[in-house]
Length: 241
Image (tube, rainbow, N blue to C red):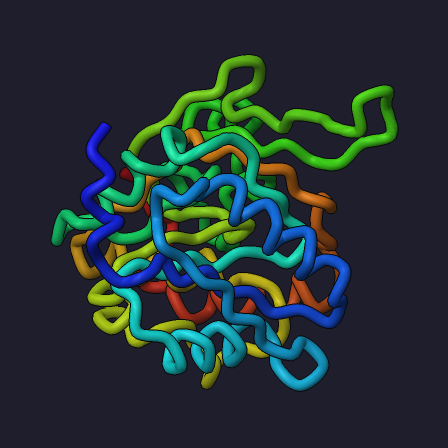
């Protein structure tokens, strides 16, 4: 594999965090995963004063690299540059939108790509990807696989936000994350990647090896942003690739 990206500006990893210990672990895992093949830096935004929408936007404005990688602070990258070289190269294509570890080819009228009005069969047929989560077992890890039992990768409609990669031109084209409409830590990913799709860009779920420290919270704040998303895009939902 050619690491021609090493001659370019750094890969800009971006996180929003309230926990220095998480940042340190994330920073170490990034360094190991890049292994000197890709220049990189991690920009950390204070999660006590920023949510993911305005925090990610603020960090993007502070950085100059062509490739932006928005990542949760409780993530550890696994693997080596061989796992990331091809996704980074794919981001060079002008028709690429966002790349992440999981996503779906379908959205229903509720704005969900699992559950909601979707049947189990529809969910499993259209979801893509694989994310390892921390778990209470002998190895401390559990794999959430899409579709069930067989990880598949490829083009998707929307991308899960545990990690979101994009070229800066894509970020600028969709005008970043919609901090004017939403607040908090939910639906920043579905909203932004769905807008990229509406611009005619191709989003992907890719085999990105990582360990996520949590499964996420589907609470009242999540439901509030879900309802905002469903109302915002009610004219184009449901949608399927």
